Image 1 (cartoon, rainbow, N blue to C red):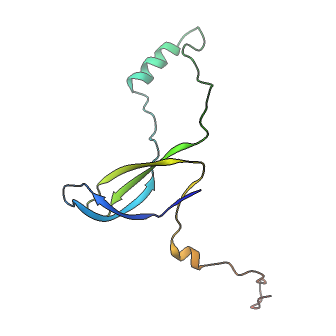
Image 2: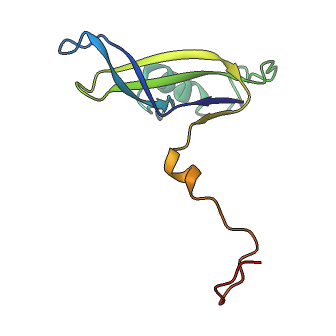
Image 3: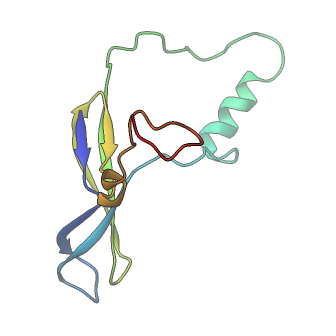
Length: 116
């Protein structure tokens, strides 16, 4: 399991910065596919009408993991860059320290102020 902090000090290549600054870290996610891209238009045209599936459907998936890509945004100039890291099955961004301090109290009774 890979646990990455939500902020990281790293070099910013932006025109304003060109120095080490704090970057906000998020996980990269692919955008929604456009209906008007050339490949999609060509595929839809070929699929229309009679004749069934015209292109091969990929069925031999071999990989069980994906390469994780971190998207880092400079807090000073808003310059964004992407950083690929190794493959992993489980990935999470680190929780903030405040959430770690608020631990649940075990055995608390509802309606009474006593703890068992």
